[in-house]
Length: 275
Length: 275
Image 1 (cartoon, rainbow over the protein chains, first blue to last red):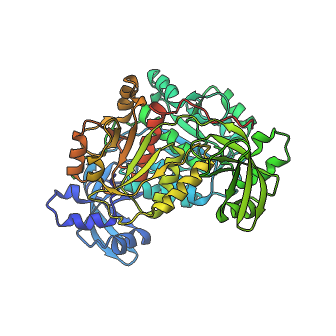
Image 2 (image 1 turned 45 degrees about the vertical axis):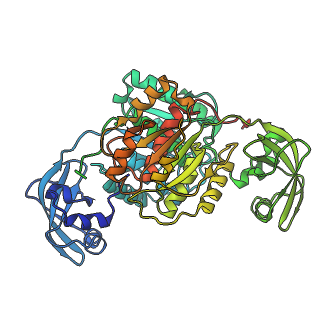
Image 3 (image 1 turned 180 degrees about the vertical axis):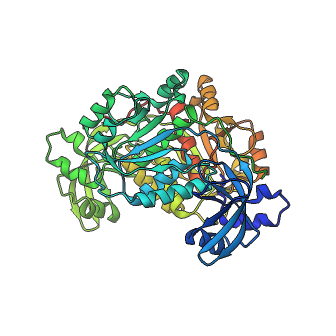
């Protein structure tokens, strides 16, 4: 699978591809993007262009902001702690993306970092940590999660970065649950449909048009009372993921992968970069 | 999701469950297992029981060897560097498992460790590293991978540990490819069926009875020539995993999760531990 690593960008500069295909480096920015615009980067962004990618004035990168599509931009100025880029041309228009949250009980840091990266690649729209009865992690660094999500989005050709929400108690989240959002619950014990059967049925009903969430419990699982309460909610579909006992992160990624394949955008292809 | 953490075992000792349900700790051993047998553990296993789990003589653990099912065993002797366990009773008979290889180009260590853990949880039978043209990792520590696979198998309630094979060149692997084994190829570029459509079609044909492999390329992707050659092989089904460019490990786990859900054992449930 293709990870556009920093080296690629430099290697590509010598080739004769059109300039719009040459910019392997994608950066998420918060400014509006339009032809003729100018975008400034902060210290961190400038350092990345200059010292990590070793780019110079005149080199190109791609920019996206989650709203205006992906734009080719040319480095106009690059100093210590600042960079200025001219927005050149639209590379890819913004397109609708599946609206699927990942609702998860926080796990230890290294696994959480990994889960956020993978969930971003698998196209979640929102990362929502929840406190459950068995959750033994007591703090979540949402800034760190947001930075990981942004980096993964930059690398995987997404046109958005998933929103990282502050942790909530599961009960509070359920109290304020949006009326139309459905949820696929990873249920390791008790009654559950096999995930393939559940998703085939839901796809046949056209349920892919609804907003969704994938829900996983903490290491140790949901408390039996929580699981019972979740099962009784009309918007919840409990699913089983086979005979092995999966870690939280594995369950989340397996359920998300299946959800995208059957109800999400699994039938689309990555952008053709003329590679 | 339930990870039987070391603490669980101690906590459970105070409860009134039948003894056969109490042993949360599962150990893979290489000796035959049968009622009345005695199994010895090496230095590492003994240290784990004694110093990590803080178990004592009389405590129970579960043992499996990939052939004889899972057995309850009682610690009879536990010293510095040795342990001896009496095999008490069968807890779960050996059962057939899906035969699905993961054929992967090696990636950097932390990601490889993670991929091996996840692939084990997702039920691969064999982990087969391959050298491809774009692979930039030059060495694979298969002993380390085997240790990771074993630990993940112990924790996820599998009755087997996946075999870790020595790396081979892709061309050599394909030259010796078993006649009946089919392969799901993660193809990021070029023609590919969406994974959901491919698996639904294969499931309808009864293709889940065949042995299978999931194949993923290195970071940077397969070389175009390799991908073309793979596509032409009659046993290969190229599949797409959606519009995002997935890292090697993400692609492997997503494809495996979908494969298990549709063609593998995704309709089975974890063993009921009376939790």
